[in-house]
Length: 260
Image (cartoon, rainbow, N blue to C red; front, side, top):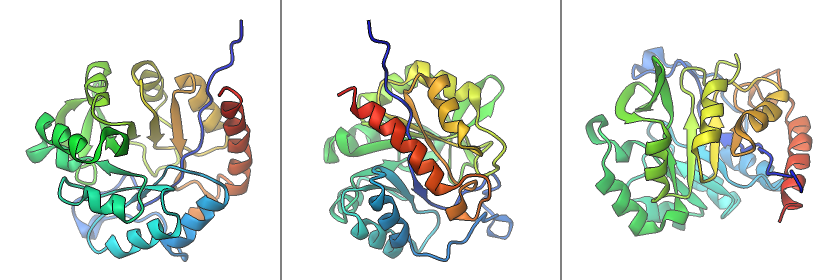
């Protein structure tokens, strides 16, 4: 009997990252300011067929840059940041393969099933990614919103993930406590996600070495993919070389293709 299974892959991102994100602009820490435009990164990801990358709009005045990135690779990227039922279809029209939503689902930091159902019905669950980025509180992980400063009433667990899976096609989960710090992933969270998720899921937070892709693969049984941010050389980091990561990722992707 074959024991072959899916392997975790690298999912690229273009966003502001940092575990020190706060609501006070004066305290906002930006880990890296790129010399290149978002469209440049979109073309870079397209060159290596890194589909499903995330374009995350943090703050105001990012719409034009996001639209430019989407236009550079129509259908290749997902977009998040300020997504609501009023603009989700517009962003799909601008070229996003899917939209990523968080805050809209948590008015006053309380989860609204009605909003999720309405958005899913409007654009289709196949076009919807739910971002349930979280912070650890004791033995639990609670969804955090608004630059990860506001803790909501939703726990990330088997029950909540099963419920959300009925209305979306993917999860994006930042471990906000370690995001942008390059000090290692939240191994316990990744392990739990591997047990809980039944739809495609991407984890972000703390990746600092090429070996972290294999680590996430092992901990999650290949059910969770990984984003690298601040550690990557294309984002000003010195710990992970983008070309080497792409080469390793190609091995995983080709292994997955052989399962089809």
